[in-house]
Image (cartoon, rainbow, N blue to C red; front, side):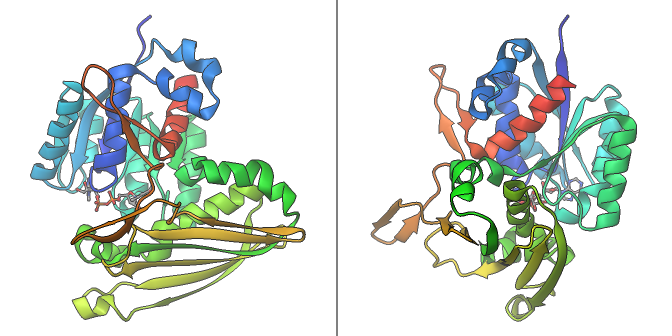
Length: 345
Ligand SMILES: NC(=O)c1ccc[n+]([C@@H]2O[C@H](COP(=O)([O-])OP(=O)(O)OC[C@H]3O[C@@H](n4cnc5c(N)ncnc54)[C@H](O)[C@@H]3O)[C@@H](O)[C@H]2O)c1
């Protein structure tokens, strides 16, 4: 029996048009088995080898961006998903592809819930970008509908798959003993809030990138937040006529007694050496772990280019002998985990 997972990608901007699109191109070319070993899912490699993946539709806000994404996908695979665009283009996709198996959601933060709910109602599984939603009621509604429809909603939390974080989860966490307190920070470039995103007034720096670290801490300790205090500032972006938070600081107290401070901004000046500044540290009763996710020991400088750093582990392209490219990395691992779960269903 031929099995094909038909997928649609809604949102193909900075992240959807890069990481999701490259990952789904690889799936369409070579299936999922090649990726499974990285996750410890080798047991499924033979069973899933015959499953085919087809990206049937890509939707964005405007026609040119939808066409660009389709062309990019075509260059990588030869396949040509149908382009959709507009205010609610996912509705047409669902109408045109009644047997759709999975919808990948990479729309702006405030536009996840509606797409997820529509996909679930159409009987499709979902892989969504973080944050799954911007409020708890919407999150509860999504979970309830997913259970009712017996569908998956996987949230892209790639920090869980960073090898440094796996080492903390599986080893260092036990060495440093019961956690007391910690800090996690992720500081994004000014360019993101002033040029790339049209939607910063509908979100904030913590809602945008804070979920990565909150999720990671919950994942390490299998505990849940019980209370929080949050403050934010509006001083830099208002200079550009943008009424959005520059920075947000959130202190979260967890059920296991630890307290973690999360610091996020999207106003880092372009002179900074790396794409983003990020890291975390946790103090336990018997030790401490510090992990710098920005400067990983790789730095170069050149005339006219200043001093730069890079994270070569997030995504990297392998070059198969046929001249194509395939994207390997912990940045793709979380998407693969969601897709592997979909294959099992
Ligand atoms: N996992 C990560 O590390 C990571 C990194 C960056 C962004 N993200 C998340 O991914 C999501 C997208 O971020 P981005 O950086 O790609 O943003 P972006 O602004 O670059 O892209 C947004 C995309 O959504 C499309 N879009 C906007 N309104 C739409 C609508 N009504 N219908 C269909 N498409 C619409 C745009 O055309 C564009 O293709 C956000 O939720 C963001 O938080 C995750």
